[in-house]
Image (cartoon, rainbow, N blue to C red; front, side, top):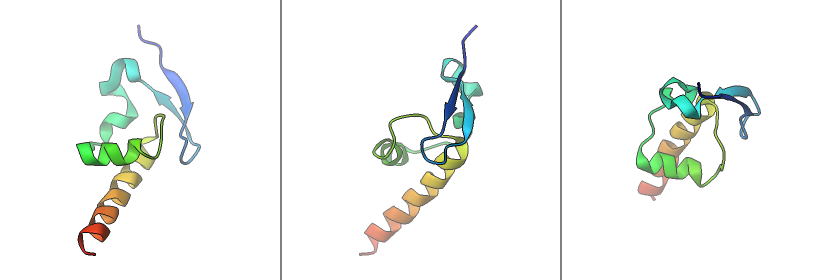
Length: 71
């Protein structure tokens, strides 16, 4: 059986359970990131984030992209 790890989100500091060993059951699998969104997140954080922060960063990327398109 895979061991799950208790982590703290580096963005909001909320505790969550990382299930990297069974990724389809991990809370992060509820957020579907595009390749570009994933790169945006990875450029800012090195460790796992909670699902809430992943969703917030996904929205932040959309705004970032729109801002740079309409310059």
